[in-house]
Image (cartoon, rainbow, N blue to C red; front, top):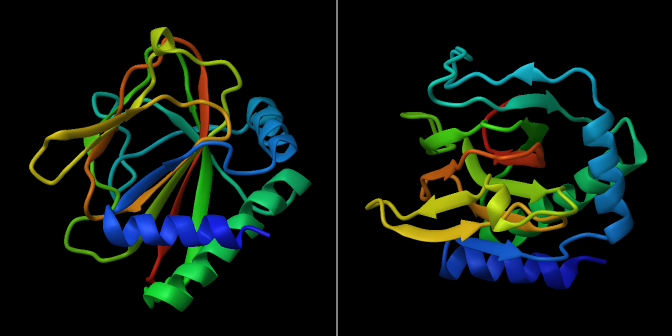
Length: 195
């Protein structure tokens, strides 16, 4: 069903290391995921680094880890499972599992520039960010800014609904600029370490 999209993502990872895709999934699934993210009552303040320490000077988002308990999350995780299998089959990455959480950024929340791969530990290999916001403009802030390894800005991504960003976790420092209204997304990682 998503074979052409998986191929497109794989080619982009090989050629550029990242890709931004609009209208990535079924629009009904996208809308249902937004409703689920808004309805979730168990968000926790996100930590920084493997120590999971809370440092509000570095990030202020709240997260809720997702699983396949609902139809929308089942559809989303099935899409990612297919992508994992495709990447392993064509790029031999050895991805072992995928983890993801809803992220909620309220007005003023941000996440400073960082890499998703933990220092001195090869674990997160491919990062995904899937946006759920049905109405968003530049005036609303909350953009994802991606950089190259030298710190040069590559792209600023508006967090619009059904937009998917996929990139190599070790290669692209990135940040989330302060949001001016509540912003929802799903952040995820394909990993090669054990659960």
